[in-house]
View (cartoon, rainbow, N blue to C red):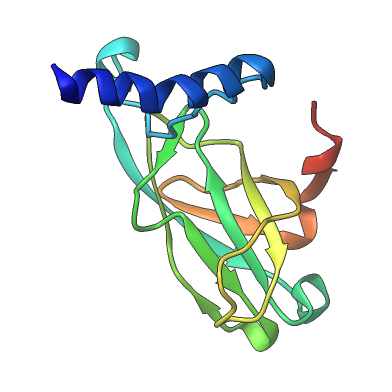
Length: 153
């Protein structure tokens, strides 16, 4: 009983200080991949697609890091959604998607960075037209930059 009274006595100043200075609570957000069975929902079989990029040195400068943004009809395979494109047609990473049909366009979060740069905040969305069936062709010069993240509401 003494322990309970001591605990209540210790908690009272903390609780009263919170009551005197109310601050809005920030909700915690949990990010996780979709668990929807798209094949079952659409009646279409899922298939694997691989993204192949083409670019000129002027398109990427010191390097361009792309992170695939999941969107129907595709979702990215967890280990294959980050790709680095660099000068002289050097690249690192591989884009592998699982789709109910070949996409006509896909979107990436992007940022300029060298190959070994640490992960940091991206700039915004890059939307790219896609051609091809299982081997998807993505020409970076035809991609369109969307607004930067700070412009989204």
